[in-house]
Length: 323
Image (cartoon, rainbow, N blue to C red; front, side, top):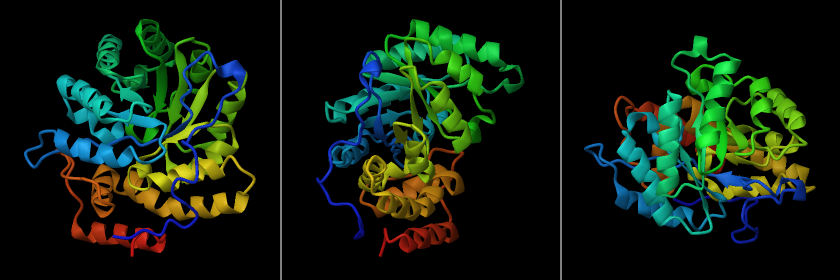
């Protein structure tokens, strides 16, 4: 299946990251583009580590800053502890040594999150992505959230990245909580998947004097995120259009506003398909189209029906990424 890369010329750009100012040099530099990699399953729902290596060999040729393992696209909520930790270990083994590995270590209890964080660090994670607890969301007030993240950060052997994903958790981490936590020496940034660019702009402004880095959580607003001060993105779409998302990240940091806008607009439709509209089943379908292993989802997620596959394929065609 051929692809029209449009503005992208392979190997014409350096790794997708930006250089932070010297004032931010004391914390891990997480700037750049990361795919939140899906977990490849066999038909019996066991993890297909051979397929993970197959995909990693291809992703390693893309100028990513690193990989997020056991995020929402990794179906982390359907896996036991051993599987979650082993996925981090195997990804570290298969990744280019220059790539950062970020493990999704969030659990509902603070105690379990601390234990999972330490296990993921032992497995090779360079940093961890910690989603807020949300099952008892009515009780997750500012004090509860600050206490949770502070205790995790105090105990973690690796840097912490806050994870705000209201489509999945049903709540935002309040901005005042984020700003307060941004002062913690072991909390280096946040991934925000909410898509509220006004909220993101306010957070970038309020943390601008701190060593705090914000990553966009979707390719649909990546250009806007860069324009208001974000330093990169964790993008589901990067799993299938990695070179294009990295190209957009580079264009966002140049004076070529039209090229950046044109590419951003082309990515919006495909991004919507593999995120909010069709989710992980849509992403795994698209992986197959672009030469990766997608494979089955783990129940209760089910594969897309043919009608949805056709809809999604038409969107990718209109954006010139499929023939």
